Image (tube, rainbow, N blue to C red; front, top):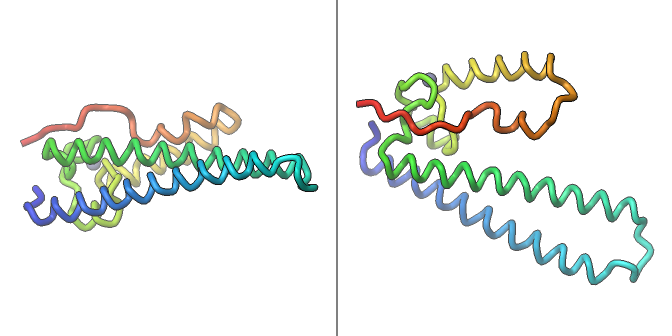
Length: 146
Ligand SMILES: [Zn+2]
């Protein structure tokens, strides 16, 4: 179990990351608005425009994905289960949470799931990429174990 001060530190890290991501999101938005105004005004190649735009969208998707994880972690923190592994119910160390505040797995399960991911990536190359991201951490209620 985490003590009060450890919980406060994790909360701080999560909330900082949340604010940072929200800010980045706003920057990306104002960038694309300026960007639209400039279209047709100069000689930037159209394929380059498209490439910039899709990079931006990918970044935006990643931000949304991370923000979702952070929200989930804050809920786990409130429920008192942030340091409980989603997979095996064992404790996750404070040091690990501080270093990787969005993790929901203990180090053993994480290593195991990375091995499985690598194996799946070998077999499933070419299958829809969107499933690969969420595969590591299945949607599941936090394990509340006393
Ligand atoms: Zn575990």
